[in-house]
Image 1 (tube, helix red, strand yellow):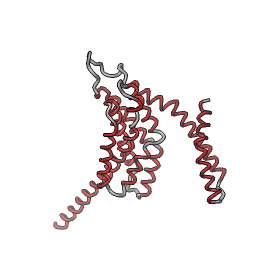
Image 2 (cartoon, rainbow, N blue to C red):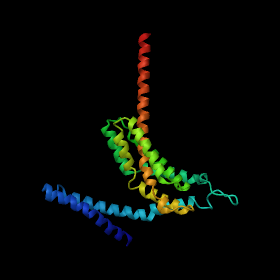
Image 3 (cartoon, one colour):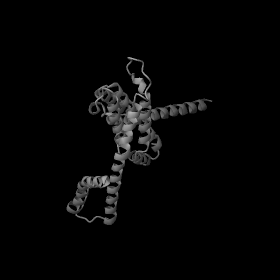
Image 4 (cartoon, rainbow, N blue to C red):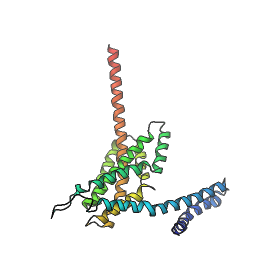
Length: 263
């Protein structure tokens, strides 16, 4: 019964997309759709797949994210406090480890990131390694989610973190190779997609609900914003390191050739 509700809701969501595409095709371009049966079959598979995915989110990813946050912050799991003592942010170290691990692993498996990294490797002629690019993005995502978890534990406002991250992004943009900048910004966007966002949202809301004094609406959101920014930082950092190493190797090679010529 739940699947039928989700299927109906998904159909309503997809209907405007189908109407616009076929409307432009027949009313503006005024040409028949080639392989119409294949196209309609594809739309049907998208409808079923998206409905099953949303059902899976409701049944597994959202509950798991909230459950893990609740378990990792429960008094029975955290270190025992002395009488009258207050909880220190370092007591939640398992939360930070889990946030880092889940952020990296979900990003590595993100279909949109895989597609972008493959295309980047093809267009660059092998200059950009798709796997290294995915690792750089995953590292940035893991750092962003870990920092967001620490922010929730501390109860700090989001504005300062966002401002500092944007300042760093701007400074890196001024010093990074021009060819990597568009890819870095796209990498920040593709990470917040089908797999990563549900778990991040569930983790943030679960943490804010489990830690005393935190407001789920005020503190639980904002992790996705940090998760978007830090992959940009790490991808541009990866490009800067690669450029520096290439210059160093070139200088070493030129120096070696000069020495051999003098001898």
